[in-house]
Length: 255
Image (cartoon, rainbow, N blue to C red):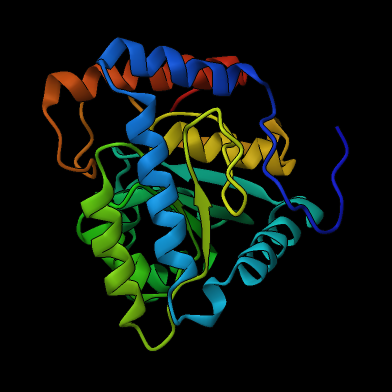
């Protein structure tokens, strides 16, 4: 696959990464129609916002900007999962590694002392979010971190709340919109994946970041990380097993 200077679509690195979304829906008893309804509603909400940087053209510009930062510059990237701890962030700050936060995992950065915390925040290229990450997600929005905002069937209230909060910022974050349906929705992308963590990996590989440049931090299947969004523990553990499967398909090992 070749990548242009101005990517206009996040074509999945492997078609299996999208096909699995149907398997996930079937496993949990979710409906494709709910996913589609949420995605279309999100698109309508964003494209009727007064925030200029959220127009369709400017969302494409935001994606191109991230492409240049992550791919053209051949960046090494650490994806922060929900079980991330401050010590792991400190370990990578001595290296030229950019950060992609899986939703609320961004909150761990504020647990690092002073100047090191600011250094870490400056490395955050984007956050991948379905809007249920709590305080860590709020911190990223307030710092205007670019967001890959995801729509699925039961998070409409969450993304509506996040967009309202983001609109109130003096400098709202840039947005790229994602969904999890087999439909082509112009103005949105489906790079594959399921949870915020493995979807972050799907986004990076769809952009063209080599799997050898990606490091997974704080991704575990045996415990629910403390930066996880609101969820039932057993259901979350089951979701993490799907995450592991998706990462394995991409040849990525968990921390």
